[in-house]
Length: 397
Image (cartoon, rainbow, N blue to C red):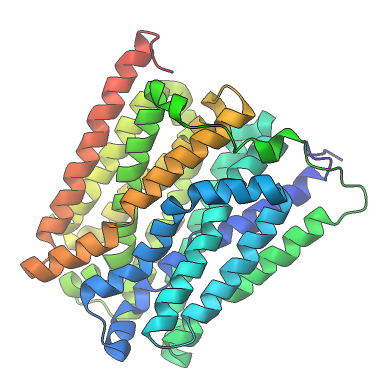
């Protein structure tokens, strides 16, 4: 039986990692299909409702470095358990009712998922270093499947049992993730994790800014996540306004972007290998540029734009994660680079949902917000093309 680097059965670790991945994005996207019900029930404005996505994403960024220290202290496997248990707790608190619970639960959820974001890449580097591309693609796919499940199921559950129970149901998957990972780490023939893994997140980050790749990855991550969370938070509402879709139908339509992102996730490694990292980033960013503009100009073609956006969504996540793991010069640098890129990326992108909500309220429509997202994507296109030229000249690092 093939073994992971930690000595555990590789298939068992892989399955555990995939179930963990299902929990790392789904709880954030779950409010979107029922955001209208939440606003009506609690009297939230559009910008305030955007905080349901902004708070967890802000935690991803602000808590990336504290999460790294926690992982160093408790080790990779216990950190995964902390993430899953904290996720379940945050979901339960968020769905308990009332604005305070909604916001506090979102913060607890964000803190738990911040740990999961950092530790998942360390699991990949520790246990699947010889299969980074395929494992990273599968991990990214699990993030999108989790988002798809919550986007598709939240509205139907809400129509039967109300939005609180619909949001709270996500705790079941987090508990399953905790139990499964506990079993992964409790096998009788398990070796202790390699001693370098927990300490791989402790490298000072200042020197990393000397490398153009770190700048490219960080700026790309910021803009990618900004667009992703802005669209994810408001796409059901946009489709309702533009096409008159009911919440259940709009939630299902939104979920298609998540499941179609599987194509981008698995295609990205080959894309990077064939045309280089810079070219891949530029091409995938162009897909992001087309998506919001297309939705605005021809909303009835939402399926086409969802497919194009899905290529960007799944492909950029996979390409960025893969480059973090593969291009680092050591495990310590890999952990430090992950904290930098994800920390700055999520922190700055956290304003995406609030930005879209505020612009919508200020202008009375979606045009300004959508075109702003397309403009941001074009910045990444230019950065990717510039980095591709450096790669061609052998200067990219």
